[in-house]
Image (tube, rainbow, N blue to C red; front, side, top):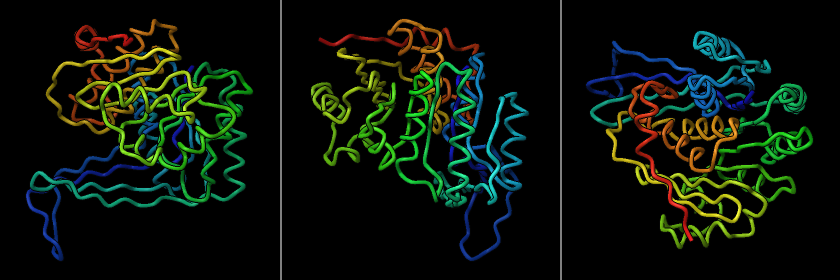
Length: 311
């Protein structure tokens, strides 16, 4: 079983308008509401890949109820810590080819709620073989909170994939106990290291040799339509993907993490791990829904992914 963690989930609300008028009434005919958050996208795609998954994190209020309801309707097993404050809504207004976002900051967790989740997490991962931790932390939790989760996972002998950014990622990488894998993009690497990281092989090789990455078994640098650059142990790989008709790239990084986790959990070869990760990422990109893939197209896209070992 894979445990997929989302500490700051949301309900993502999408309003489609022909015109968006400021300081006036805007009537919406098409509304889409989805349980959102990077880890929820990961959990949904893992489930669609027919792998056993448990979604967890913190939820509160009627918004939290809706998140759980949506996961149940998608047959995604879940076990969240209920908190006092409401989970957040994130609104996207689609108009004239543009997207205006209104994002709630979400609930503030108490110290007691933070401790309660760590206790819950420790119990949930006992029957698991792999853990994914995705996205931002809610207010109230310290920036090294993910470090505690990684440390608990180490004590239980569980591999952990961490997909976060900023100070949370920095804290995880500077901690004594390292995650098994991370999945940054070049912008997140630049933010982490304080200098511009170019998406070129020699530059990425040099970057991933930085001491901050020591002890991380897998580093998957996602590069959008250019595929990915990967460091696995002492080896480097370039993963190339075909040109595709992108419909909705939102959540494709999460789908990539899901495919990566599934292939690792099935003890597949390095080539198949990387091809599976890229395939699920692409399959999400060609769908209108976020955190969704059409499994029937998996083999077709899988065969187009090329993995090259670099020397």
